[in-house]
Length: 125
Image: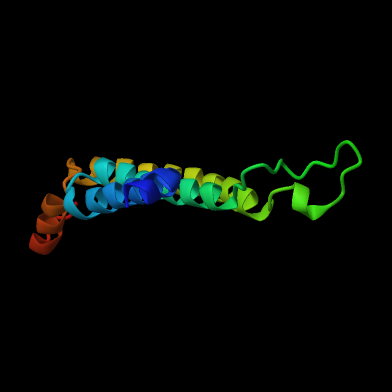
């Protein structure tokens, strides 16, 4: 079993990052901490995709030295997915942070339970 974990170390770290992020997202009440948890989940997903796309002994798909056989290169699709995901993740994080700032300005707290209590009582400005 230990040999399998050592061989798949990158995948194990990716799953661990995802689980840490998920637990952080589920258990924290502070909105900033929830956003950090979501970013941990994103990072775990990107690491997993990058690990699955890497093949030992192959190089990036840049045609050089006249080598055109596909067996010499890695698959570029996982790398493209990771780059696209990172761009989307940064945009979503910026949107979440801006909404969090608006929530703080309105309710003067970042605690989800306090915001829910305020909304139930109808103490909205």
